[in-house]
View 1 (cartoon, rainbow, N blue to C red):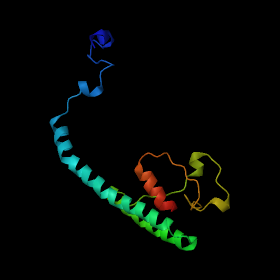
View 2: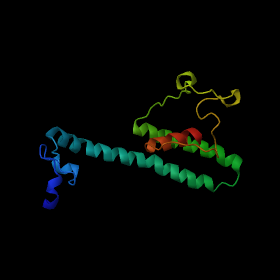
View 3: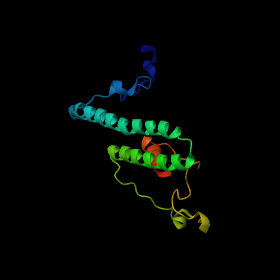
Length: 146
């Protein structure tokens, strides 16, 4: 790597071709928090896997029901409860919903037939777009739209 030494910043010693963690030392507090929070993160992951596994089992079981009038309410009940359990285990006890402020956004409000609230007309078979910031988006929208 000495042939790339010419690209290093002489005042700071930062080299652009070296990974960031090479020039970074972990403090004692950071090390202790990693040791303490590591098992907590693993425990939360294990706890989260339980409702997601139950959600997958519910999907398999409800897909075996041929009658849609029975399948859809049962799927809605199971999906809603297991997704809610996953959200509670992730720490989301309440997620507030509000309509967009059309005056602040300077957009035209929708017509009266589409003003039922956020995700108001979304249901089975609807196309729902999200930016997939985290797994919470998918779990919440599955619970909300199921």
